[in-house]
Length: 474
Image (cartoon, rainbow, N blue to C red):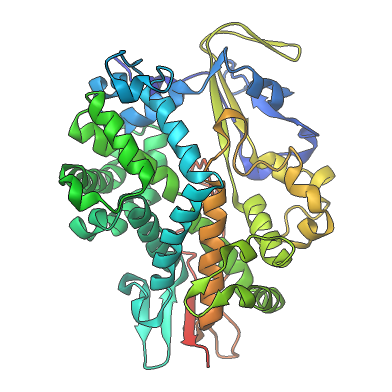
């Protein structure tokens, strides 16, 4: 019997190469939604209103994708059912929230922890402490270092962003115990993430060993974490403690709880470090942009302390935030999907039960009527010239509707925090090892890896990392 996720992938949906999408097909609040029909190699493409899809929560479901994600990570059939099980009256913690199942309760906890407020402030402080640690000379993670002298480190920019931000997230949500009991967990996650598209697209196991091996290592790390006694996990975030208490009460097994945490960990880490890499890559390759952002962010750094509110304020750091938004626009391949559960009318089209509706947001980011004729150029100025551009319905790097990414605020904070600390502490440039005899850099600007399926920030091509030189600023 096929898993629900296999059914989802084999369902009647079809997108198209997003890099080749015609922006003329995307106007206003409309974007391309495709209903696939078996017509040989041809597919019928129908344009409808995204807003109508968001409003059709009763007939367009997101659950099939979420169930498939649990299955793809290896959660048992019993565990998957328990995640959607309505609690009984005697389950006091579960029943206290209006008899919501665990998936909905998890979403409630996500929003409480990640939307602006005291919980996010606490979590952000945890993140910044670890980012501050990983951006000091003596604590740059060794797997990132290509070479070193007394006054210079040559590092992999992509690995540096990855190791520091994934470590920060792991410790901030789960406390130090997760990484301390599994010291190679961050490395294993980064190896898994390179191939995670195989899981999302349900590659056969014999073809997906490059993904399943590191995935299983990360699962084992979370299994060891869940097995620890509570006093060793006291420094975990409130979200983590509350969710595990609910899972235990609902009868979710230890291994399935570990996989549930692993899925959340994947969701929180799969995009931020790539976003950080792309933003820094553009800044480093544009001396004027680097100078402007370094000047803007300097007042936010006081010794080892970072005033994150200054960094995310578009009035105090306009170019930084414009560059962040432009990086999102240029590198995001965010996509959302729904399963039709009953006859649904969207505009003048009828969608039938079992059909899958795909919402690819990337084509809207290249709509010339919204972003200008130079949509295929990296130009932060567009967000400075038009302050409300981030509110345009064509700009959806974090999706929308009920699945609007609750981690968007934390993602911005961790990325700009990393960048500001790096620019404050180091003279950073492309490594001389990547320069030719005339002194020009032989390192090409990284290319987007559009050959692999992606549902978030696009990775660079495997060979397109940047080697950068960092020296302590005088």
